[in-house]
Length: 339
View: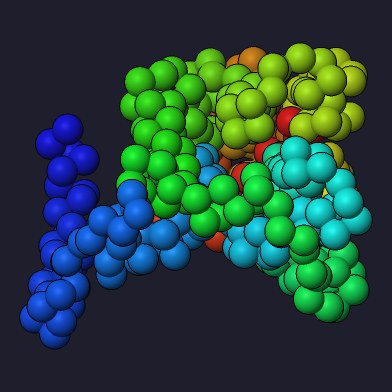
């Protein structure tokens, strides 16, 4: 709790300064009135208008918790809104329109997740794709026009209704925040998500099922049971076939492919940096993903002395502490190996 308080200190201080400035500028800023059973005032208006952003931020929290980022949340919201509006305009029931909107958002999330978890793209690159494409998809759904929707009691209740004096969107945002806090702080899933986000490789070595944790995170957002069908949707072909045993040769092939070399180059005696660094990376990954001993690895790399392998592994370990580019390269290669 002390650690959480320390992280919240400066954001809360900045918020207090903003509120104090508004109060000085407008003495009626904090004034609330009860009109026809509903609270009104500047603070209520701010919360009501900010509720959609709060919901987006809550979804982003889990993404950031896994060590990623999502640039496409705005575009996904536009697509979901366009789908819901199109369904209502076509005469579909409110429940069907809302289900279609949720389905569109879930499909977008699975697309991003597949690019990151299966293809191995960086989260910022993967979500940038949908950030750009999502706007076009929303335009296609709406035909580039404003969609007129006939007044609907359920939609109006969600968007403009009130309960216990507060707008329904505010209550929805508060409920979602409470649910997310419960998942993050009171369940194993929340701890596992933070572990995977903090260090995916260390989590895998500690015995955590990284892909299963991602599955559980998706399921918690979409309220779906984790079964074979859901796993296939999320992980695609990776779940339909048993994973092959990782060997030194498979590691060497993956490293050589990533750096544009031949496996024979990795095993050669060439000392040029363009070959020496990939060779050291291959030795490091072979040590971490196979059960071969250092002498066995030395023989697999062209009959080198085992101290050469030990030295190469240690050098990569030291470089990983400060070299973000190398960490990214190894992460991409591991995605190729573990795929």
